[in-house]
Image (cartoon, rainbow, N blue to C red; front, side, top):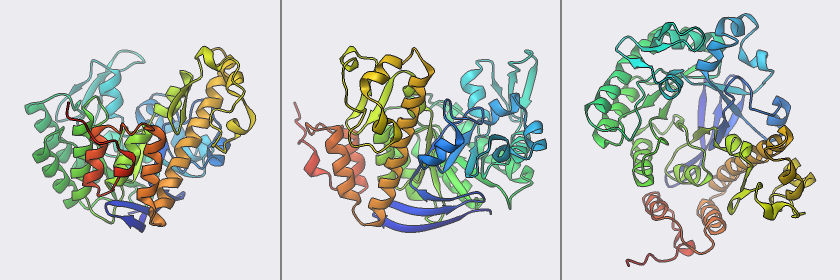
Amino acid sequence: MALRFEVLGRFNRARAAQLTLPHFECQTPLFMPVGTQGTIKGLTTNQLEDIGCQIILGNTYHLALRPTSELIDELGGLHKFMNWPRALLTDSGGFQMVSLLHLADITEKGVTFQSPVDGKPMLLTPEESIQIQNRIGADIIMALDDVVKTTITGPRIEEAMYRTLRWIDRCIAAHKRPHDQNLFGIVQGGLDPVLRDICVRGLVDRNLPGYAIGGLAGGEDKDSFWRVVAQCTAALPEDKPRYVMGVGYPLDIVVCSALGADMYDCVYPTRTARFGTALVPEGVLKLKHNAMAKDTRPIDPTCACMVCKNYTRAYIHSLVTKDAMGSQLLSYHNLYYMMQLSRNLHSSIVEGKFPEFVCNFLQKMFPKGDVPEWVCNAMEVAEIDISSCCAPFRKD
């Protein structure tokens, strides 16, 4: 095992911890931006350090296609290749195949897909996924799992969950760098509590360095989403990191943190920036709107980032979608917002002020008190009293 996970503070189920990885000492809860090709679109690694980014996620599938894992290995690993001194996490490559390639076929051997380069059939096995990730050299590597959309029901969900458990053993056997890289298993099982429970128990029996909750953030309703997170976090070990994959909406991160999750990743903050949308405490601000054309305020007057200190909404409005600079500035601000959210979650838990933080967050986002019912239900389970920022529900 190449990590240390030390819980520094708790509030009921929520926890703030120090996660020590080979390349960086991280504070959780934390959000990881997605750098598909070993880069966060439009930002330099220096800028990512400036805004307090701790871990970047790299997509194994894209890196294996180009520049190839062999080349990255030859040039000293991904940290050196992209000049990033802090931590990296790579996914297994499975999700991209299923989401990008309609022609992916999953069997016991692995995932068969058509090469986007020459159209030839290719097979990604658990063994090969781990070999590729061993060459790339990230601090955390993910097991190849059998990915199914949560909206699917029936025997396919059960098949995928049991296959994920069989594949974890193949991943563990193939992993040649356990002292430099941490292999995380992924809990599958769709929205079925029985299957999720079997998967959690199977993975915990393997005593892995950390665990991810997979198969969410794919279109299921929010009530199902938080209940799966609550079930998995309650059953996973206290002394290991818990990572909810694909979660990037600030509200979801606050709810999952209250339920005991530690790590998140998503393309949302940078992707939404490229569409001209800024993350603000009230929710979002659409810079494309004509109302922004003469607005001389910063994106967020309460934000200390370089963009909010130096540029007006009017200026960014004039750039957005016309000039790369617009999406760069918005990406910078949005990631700063996510890093600040992570820091605030961590410090409020450590200082014993987590409920106040949650209420303050919800009051800004829902000033009328119309906090969604699923959030209220989740907070009740997390034992966080948010009555002061919720309007009572009317049963019309």
